[in-house]
Image (cartoon, rainbow, N blue to C red; front, side, top):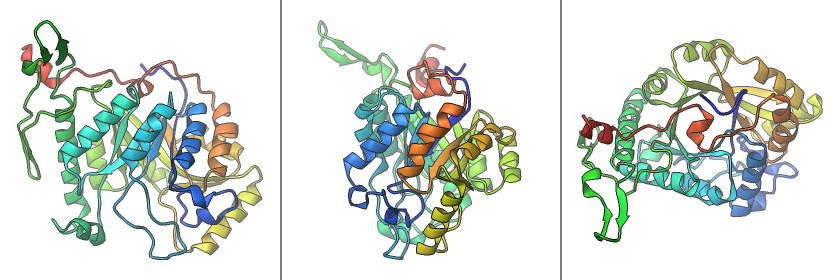
Length: 363
């Protein structure tokens, strides 16, 4: 069972906000966007509000070709690792693409984050679709979404096997015998698939959660299939409620709805700010459902989520103004009871799984 009652709420935070012109708003602090202090302030707000997730997006895309738009980003794993000792409760979820990243590197980085965060790590799967991203590596051409998501599914399987390749008690640190590791409790994964051939084991011991939380975004049929087969949590990037409802019907476990948000205490002010952003940088439409209005109207939306949806990932169009209002004027009115668990899996009612190889060894 989940150790927290009420709607699940996460946030995805990206520099000055998702809108590429948000850095030009008063209060955005553009000079600090690539500093540790900027991310610390955002994370402290999220942690104090006891939100379930803080997702840090990542991509190999440079972004808009317009030099007036916000461009550039920090590495999501490094950012969340920096935030781990500065937070105590919220789950930390970097986005890591599977298209140009080896599964071995991904599993090691996320397992390490699970150690540094004391069991609060997750991983959001992503794919890289553009020729420009492929050209950065020069190893393979850009591919169709169904090909990329098939590779992503294989990557998740490899990552999960590597997370299991050390049994929980593999590290013995036995001074009497001089053994640090029980070698019999490290296992080869021996995976051979369409895209990868991985022997293993990992070089990182089994982390506090055993299996950090895996999140898969759903934006089309190929990603929906991967979420249904491999996700602990699915994020619906739907533009309308009927689509979200249809996607949710094909999923088990926790399903979260993406909502892009821009909040002000006055609805007309929120609309004016949104219009101003679009004037500064036109042509950037919503990537999910969008809510521009007051905290009270967002509370109403979150109390009436589509069937099969258990919560939302809020994606502020501007920071820090919208995030501050989410923390002060939205979360307290959702009737969420305090989280009493310890790990990110606890927040989603997921037990700590045994290593598949330890289970096989006992048969």
